[in-house]
Length: 242
Image (cartoon, rainbow, N blue to C red; front, side, top):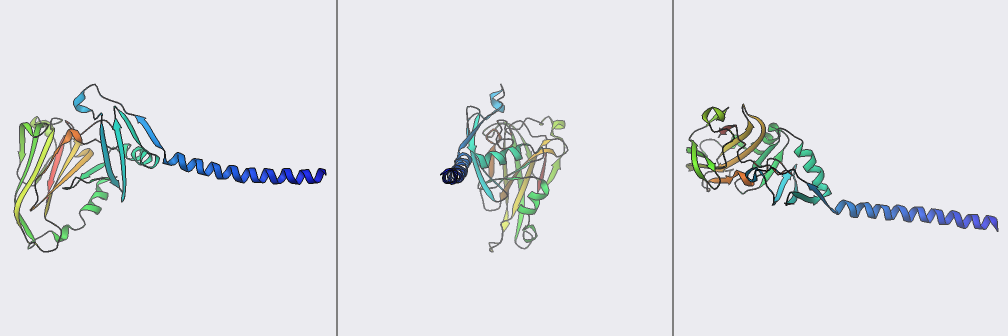
């Protein structure tokens, strides 16, 4: 009888262990799908803070989304981990294309490899850019004093001109002629840097021939994923490339 009871006890222990493992796995799966919340540091200056916004971005071919309401970021665990990774990168590249798709890159080299791989096709006789117009506005919604660049080039220190940490909205427009062959469209790229001498976070815009000007209010763009700070009054240097 004693041996029989020992066998029953052993079977019960084994079944309990299996059932417990199964329940534990299911619980972990549910937890991984649950929303996670983080409080963000908010500035006293409302102009430098994004308190309420939704953000969708792509990183290494995968799409992620999160929401910020009253300074609290909410997302799933998958996004939470990526946001943690990217927000720790001091040289993060934010690329926003003409269709407002947002892509993050770890380095400038990663961006160049992914976004400029077709540049060898973007040469004569496929098209010709006649004019470039990059307008930098002091205020949001393309108002206030304006600084205009009308050609390729770079400016390593906007503070010298009195425009460092002063730009709130931008507009990039190009004109020219393009062969309408089934090839990538001719484009111009403007890169904005948080620091002088092309350092810190980078924000990249592109504009295309035969398309509307690319314009953005910088106060609507977070400096990085999962942060309350935005690109308004952040730009210290820039480059314009064909």
